[in-house]
Structures are given as structure tokens and as C-alpha cells.
Image 1 (cartoon, rainbow, N blue to C red):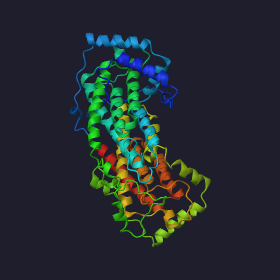
Image 2 (image 1 turned 45 degrees about the vertical axis):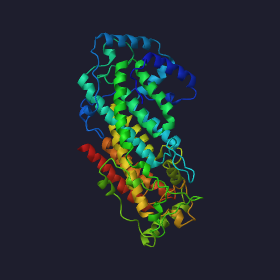
Image 3 (image 1 turned 45 degrees about the horizontal axis):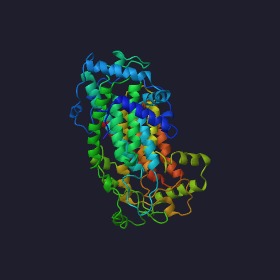
Image 4 (image 1 turned 135 degrees about the vertical axis):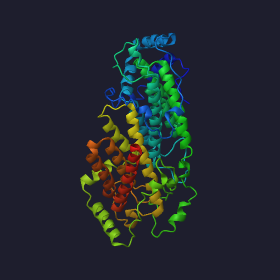
Amino acid sequence: MFSYKHQNIKSVIIGIFSLFLLNCKKDQSSKTNEFPPLVVTNLNVDGGKWKTILLTSPTEISVQAPSSVGSQEYLKEIEETQKIIKIVSPVQAEMIKFWQSGAVLRWNEIARELVAKYNHTPQAGLAPDPNHPMASPPFAARAYALLSVAQYDALVTAWHYKYIFNRLGANRYGISNNQSISELPAYPSEDAVVASVSYSILAYLFPAEKNYLYQKALEHGSSRVWSGANLRSELEAGGDLGQKVAQKVIAYAENDNFKDAVDFDNEWKKNADKIKDAWESQESPKRSPLLPKLGEMKTWFDKKIVLGTVPPPPPSLDSQEFKEDLKNVTEIAKNRTPEQQKIAEFWADGAGTFTPPGHWNQIAEELIRTKSLSELKTAQILATMNRASHDAAVACWYTKYKYFFPRPSQIDTSIKKGISLPNFPSYTSGHSTFSASASKVLSHFFPQDSTKLRKMAEEAGISRVYGGIHFNCDNVQGKNCGAKIGDLAVKWLQK
């Protein structure tokens, strides 16, 4: 559990300051990726009426009313905060700058870094370790979706109560600082909401990182007091709200069937044995494939419709269509140009990276930062895209283990690969499916960039053919499936 409630904020701040003085050489995350402070042009004042995802409505979560402006309790908080502002150190000032540039995006960055840290190849025969998960692309898609859904539902709830209580920031009532004055009501604190809910979701997904994440959540909340942007009671209310939403999202995750996606009893072989020339692991020693039962997971959108996007069977291995597709891959592998190799490597997103869904989160961040969007709008964009990416993973993996289509190098061992070969069937391409779904959603929010986004998705898909690890039919059908799921996500918004 994480909460700002009942903590002596001044003691917390002193403790965090000391901690970071000791560890500033070890943790440089607050000094990298510098961006200007977020100055919102559209507050989305109707945000408290937006449709929630897992919550039935914002009123499902209760928030205690704040003390009145001018009350003794309120004036005491003003005095406490004013004293803290006067002793802010250069290190703390750097942390203020870091978190001022967008809370939702900063926690998305932290999530991507953790995915990269845990994105590794498991040792053969070892069961999954919950404390050190393998952050494969489907795991990552699930993680990004759970995080952004939690942030979004918590912020819709926060907006609902902000405009009920309508308590403006303390710089309107006595706090003297250099921060711009926001018209967004300060109670509950949206930063505390995001810090609290993000800590809980990421600690659930990456248990071994709990202490690190707790430290980041305290830093985030404390930065709001150091800057004079929030009072203690605003942090407490936001932190409590975030925890309540996180509990509901974690309860959902506990029953989404992901734990059953790993098939270590080898039941997946029963399906593979029924298919002629079925996919086989190309690794030595051979390993069980990745998440063969992922297709049984819950989806964020209607499961029947999501699986209705699953493409028809791939071409038979003795068909002319397949022979031409294989010839295409073989020719590229023999005559791969430097540009094709560069594209294959750029989109590879293998071990130690954010994964393909994370790559698209990074693309989304770059687009979002060109606009002055509220935390709520940012969360809406990421929640829509990441739910689509998650469902794209479910549909793609369902397809992979329905057909067990072999990789090109299994059919022709002379094919020279330009990138590493994943340990699961070929049809359809996960990169193509993820990229088409994400680009569809982002094109809805950023129509002026739709052509660029479409070309990026196409390049991500064809990059796997350039790398010699996919047939073009994998790419084309994956792209079709992903686009349909992206459209499904947009339709959810338009309701």
C-alpha cells in the first residue's frame, strides 16, 4: 500500500532529500529526458463526466471534502508549505522540473524502463518467477494497459471531485512561488493520484522494484510541496483515491487469465501435432514457445469481436502463393541492403528494449509532448492505445497457436537472418499487429500525423520481412487484424 496520508510531510521531505543526496550518482532518472513544464491550454473541465473503463462511474470512489479555505487547518498548511519552499535545495529543484513536465508521461517512462530491464530470454525449463517476470511483448502490452487504465480511471474520478469541491491552488491564497497559476482545482492533487496509482500497479507487476517505485512516488508527491503547487491535504486525498482505484485494477488483473497463458505442461503440443509441418523451436536446446495460451486471456473490448479479427489460415506450404512468399524472403536475405538492415534493427525491439508496444508508447509520448494536454487527456490517449495493443496481442497469439505456421528459416535453413528469431510461430506478425492497432488509435487523436503514423506502422511490419524472420503474409494479415482492433478502440471512444 502507498499513501501520503498520516505522514509528516516535512519529515518525509527531509528523508527523501537525504536519500537522494546519497544516491544521486546512482539514480540519474530525474536528470535525464528534460522537458519544459507542462502548461495546459485545455483543462477538460467536463473530464469528470468521461466514461470510465473498469469503474462503473467516478462516484464509485469516495473522496472526503477538504477543509474550507481560510480555516485554521488550511492556514496551517499554507504556513507549513511556505516554510518548506524557502529551503528547497538545487537537487530538489531538479526533481521539481522533472515531475512538472507531465506526471502520466513520466510514469509511462518508468514503466518502459522496467519493461526493458526485465525483457530477457528465460532459461530453458524454468518456471516463471513472479518477482522477476519476463517482460515479453505480450507481458509488456498487458502492463502498459493496466497502468494507463488505472491512471485514466483515477484521473476521471479526480476531475469529478475537483469540480465538486472547486478548491483552487494555494498560490491563489497565500503561497508565494515561481509557479504559473493554474485554473485547475487543486483538490485532490492529480499528481498524487497518478503517483499513488502508478506505484501500486507497477509494484504489482514488478514486485522486486517495490522499494524503488515507493521512492519515486514519494519524490513525485514531495516535489509538489517543494514547488508550492500542492498542500499536504491535497496530496493525501489524491494518494488515497489512487490507492482505491489501483485495488480495483489489480483485482481485475488477478482474474484476466494471464497466469494461465504459460503452458509448461506442454498441452500446446497437442494442437501442434495435428498440423503438418508445424512450427518447431529453432533454439538449441529447443524451448517451449512463448505464452501459448495467451489467446484465452480477457480482452478490454468485446472478446467475440476481438477474436473475430483473427485472419484466415495462412497459405499451404505447397501452394504457389507460399512459394512466392518464401522466394521473396530468401531473395531479401541474400541481397539485404544496408537500408533494409537499418530498418530491421530499428524496429527489432528485442531483449533489453521497451518491446514493440513500448516503442509505440514512446511514439505516443513524442506526439503528446507537441501539445499542451492535460494529465487526463494524456491518460485517455494512452489508455485507448494500450488497450488496443493488449487486445492485438491476444488476437495475434491466438492466431499463432491456431495455425502453428513455421518460420522462414525452418523451411529454408540457408536463410540468413538480420535480427534475432523469436521462439514462437510465425503467422501472424506481432510487430505488424501491434503497430497497426497503435497507429490507428494515435491517428484518431493526432489526425494531422496520420500519414506519418501509417507509414511507421507499415515500416515496422515490413521490417520483420527484411530481417528474414517473417513471411509477408504474416505481415499483411497481422496488419489487417491490428487495424480492425484499433478501429474497435476508437469506436469505444466515440460512444
